[in-house]
Length: 355
Image 1 (spheres, rainbow, N blue to C red):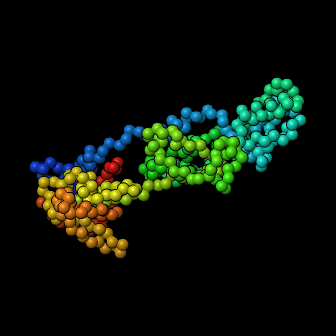
Image 2: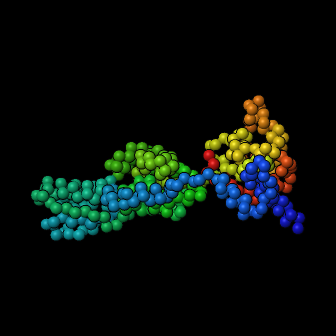
Image 3: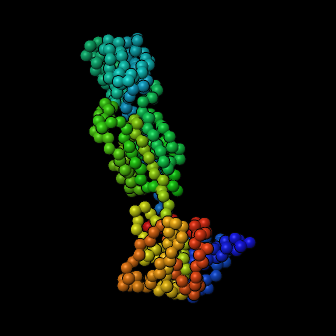
């Protein structure tokens, strides 16, 4: 019974802090549904751009590209008009990317596209066997170009490339981003040693460094220079977002939980602004920051928010899970028990998209 009473006390306190009120209105929450509806109205509109839609669009633009780079293990089909032994002939590329053909012996095709392979074979036959040979090369089985996509994607795993691929292609093959979990960046780790392979030399890759790509810049702002090529053995990793929050309660206009973005520094004044500022009933001079210690205990840091806003007192940087409490006529105290249950009670009141 006591636990149920405590739960409803937590709900009531969080609800009273969350509901935006006019200065001359009574601060009496009607129901949790009404509070959540009010919270939704206060949340800034999210961007209308669906990053996964942009990802699929960019990937689809090159869907019919035929510039797959041949590699060891691939099986190609070769046709040379006038040579019976080379009618729909299926040939695997060996470990060095070579095939053996009648009259011209070994031909290195690693790193070439099927079209470039046709030109090379045609040139060799014309130089020694026949005039104007008609050569056709197609890929029968793709076996050499694997990439690994890991992290916050729908279907992480190893994928076989069947054409020349770019970053958005690899992400699309893995089903796209887990938008609620993925950070807005991706890491590309190139495989192999310090020097590029023969195939990569042909493709123009001269280094093996890892890359960090800003997905917002690529997908939302359209910077296609960040849609870098992907090569065999590359590992594409989308890190999961680590969620960190602080809380603003008491006589403020939009109390609740607020996310701390990665790399963001949140001060007390910024936190108060995110909560819509103080109500006219607030006693800003008696503001307190309740901070969780490593041993599980909490400590209260008194601060005069009015002096902070005037610039006569140094602004305080908040830490993860800090609770800023602004007392007033509607919320005079905050019970110690509330601090233990604050995460669960306020989880539905998180302001997403606040920058």
